[in-house]
Image (cartoon, rainbow, N blue to C red; front, side, top):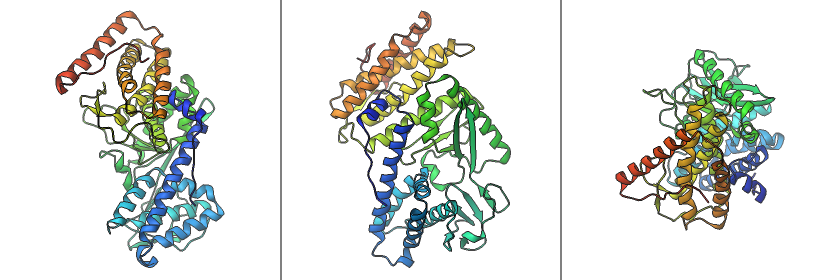
Length: 425
C-alpha cells in the first residue's frame, strides 16, 4: 500500500506565487497519503510482535487491504480523512511507549471504508462512552461493547435517536461545487482547537450552510479561480468552533489534519470567505513542507510577526507570511466589489504593509534552503506586484502609521528591533 509522491518545479513555483490550483492540491494530497501510509507501516512494525488478536490492528489492516483490492480510491479517501493524520501520529508514539494506540479508531475507519465500497464485513467497532464511531460517516449509540456493521441503519444520512451522521454541506456557485463535511463528532478534531463545538443542534446546520454558501458565492464570483479550485479540491472538513465571548471570528488549521479547518461563524460570508482562504494557505504550505525542506529545522532565531506581539520562529513566520499573502489578495479584490469599499481599502493597505515587513525578514534570513529562497522570492514577487496598486492616500497613510505603531509596540514589548522597509524586494 506504500507509495511516494513528488512535486514538479512548475507546481512549486505556482505555490510560491500564492496559488497552485486543483492539480497542485491533488499532488499535495498525494504526499499526505504517502505520509499516512508510512505511519501505518510504522504502526504495523511496532505492533508486529503482539498477537494479532490482542492488538486488533491486524483485523482492521486486513479489512482495509480487502477494500483496497476492490476499491482503492475509497481507501485513499478514508486514509485522507483529516483526523487520521492526528490519530496515526499519536498511535505510533503510544505504541512505541507501550501505551494504548487507540486501534478502535482504525477499526472504525476500516468499517467506514468497507461500507462506502459495498464490501460486507463481520468486523466490529468498539464503543467509547456508549458510542461507536465510524470516522467520516457518524456514530451509533449502543448498549454493548462493540457495534457490528450489520446493525447500522440503512440510511446513514438520516439522524435518529441512536445514529448521528456526519453532516455534509454541498454548495454550488459559478459552476463550481464545494462539498465539505461539518464534523462535530471526531474525537481527534480537538487538534485544531480546544474550543471545538459539541454536536450541533439540527437547527444550527442551515445557518452554517447559508454562511458557507454565501462565502463560496463571493469567492466564486469575484476572486482568483485558483483559490476556488484549490478549496474545491482540497477542503474536506469544516470543524465548528464554539462561539467566543466577544463573538470575534476565529479559525485554525494544522499539519496534523490536512484538509480540515476550524471556523467560528458570525453569519458573515465575507469573514468566512477570508478565513477559508487564510487557513487553506496554511494547509497548502504545511503539506509542501512535508515534501521539501524550505529552511534549516535547527535554526533557533526569532522574528517579528507583525500580526502577533510575541517573537516567532522562522517556520511560524513563513507560515504567517504565506497565509497573509492570501489575506492581502482577498482584500485587494474585495475592495473592488464591496458596496462600501473604505474598510476593504484599509484592510488591503494595512495587511500589505504588515506582510511586507514580515517578508523582508524572510528575505534577510540566512536559514532558508535554496528551495526556501526560491519559494520566498516567488511570494515576494507577488507581493511586490501589489505595491503598485493604488489606495486612497489618506487610507494608505493611516495604514502605514498603524503598521509602524505595531512595530514600535513590539519593540517595547520584546526589546528586539524589527526590520523595516517599504518593498519586499
